[in-house]
Image (tube, rainbow, N blue to C red; front, side):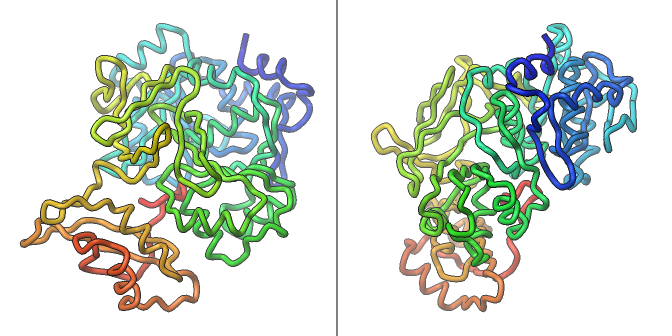
Length: 431
């Protein structure tokens, strides 16, 4: 059975929209018109699909799954990396603006792609964030990727904040499709537009990032009275700091807050949060196991990726994946405190950038913070800090330095502090 017909059978009314947005809506009944847009795509073709969660992008995504293509979702905002993605993903066809715009001769084969073709399965190629080195091309069997949505679950009216090229965005879309839910496509991913979309469409669930939640807190526009429909905020894709979580939880006392956990290599995993305003979680779900080794979180998941197209496999002989996330443990609960590959060694003492950033974010007026290590002839490395103030805020570096001196140990205190804009990528996470 095709994915389209399976979704129609699960829907109470295929004519009812599952997506609404600026000037458009899309129902499963509308999908009957989709096939002509993918003419010329053959089973097993690697298709770079440049789009968004709009009618054209979703029509083509579902049609390509049914055509058993290997799909690489991309967004226009990341245009500078497209040629790298095409080469790393062995792309055969490029689709943009709802139509095939380029076909190129297949130069080389790859065992992972050939495995999908021999199975007759659709595939999915996603890219890592590239925060440490060039992005890795991650290959999933789309049939296995979709299997996680087979169990019926509640579906709330959800703002589609996470993007078309992100595993979290795809997770939102297919959760809604499989559970007869509704996705609201945002007018824009700005504070004012998101708040207005939540009000206009009675959005119940906002999946977003800690960076965007900090933007909401510092906007001064966030309060429970203005968002009566909102029931749940989920946050992930980067580390959350306690001061931001506490602030947003206080501003929205009737809203539940849940941390999500996932990686492009593993998909979005089931997470249980201890308290709405705490960072302690449990990770599990069907076919998922976790363990901690030397302070680092390891995950074994049945619905994991097949592997990388441009890097060695990261799985050990038993299928464990080292996430490189550093964690603290409190009985059955764990809290993510940083990344093993970003630890700063200051005179033999380890500093987590997240520890410094969290301390900076607890200082009034700091909207975003980014800590990094720099070479030092005496200690090997020292800490440097970039802080972005809230709009209209005059940030005193001397006062900030005194604050950090009170809350951080000597080796973790930044030697250099700058005020400026903290870079944020197209996925609304720090880069």
